[in-house]
Image 1 (cartoon, helix red, strand yellow):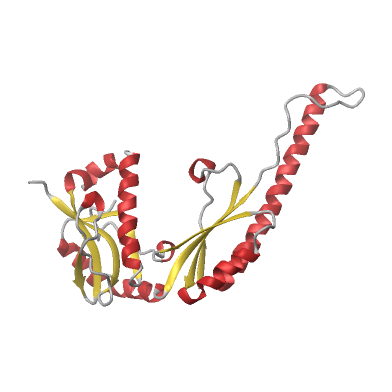
Image 2: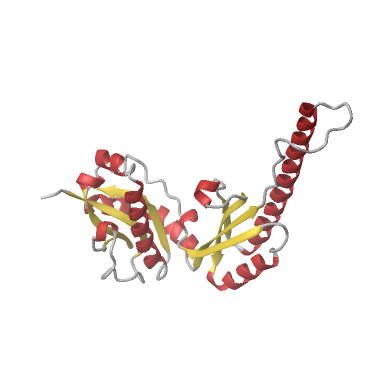
Length: 262
């Protein structure tokens, strides 16, 4: 019989959380709860021959497996967060048994309680801002000035192109700061994530803002309306959400507390 570990998706308060019946986690495993010290962990069983420390390192090289695992993880977290204040746990956090999870809830009770109090009645919204890049300078063509060599003319065009790109970037970055500042006024908290490269974003434009905003539920309409007033000023603004507050619930569980947390 395959040995199993306990995969943890999220932590919530013991009262008001959703019934996990019918929820499927990673690998289609049924989700259950572990309650201790007024907190509840949403978990499922996973095979250690795939989720143990060494096998997991190999599994993480399989991008299809990672995507399927991430989708299942997110599905459970969202289901919980729609019903109750939730602290999502980092992807692929696996404990060897329920006793370890109960010990975690006991040991880090105050940390979890503080985070849950901070995100109660609030959701995370994401805003990405894109700016078009100036067209590049052609490698040939154009008219040289009298007595000017083709090489010199090319260098001048190249310098002009770089100047245009630098000017466009500075303008876009300034606009992005203005967008972030306006949205942060409505939000309770905000965080700037690293801009994604085109391979990840799927877009050729510069990403000049990758922001996350924690917003009171009763201010969600105001947040969206504020964003709409910022459109049409040189940036393409993309809104996502509302989501579970992934960006505002960071709790370092520590390797000593979770020997199978990878």
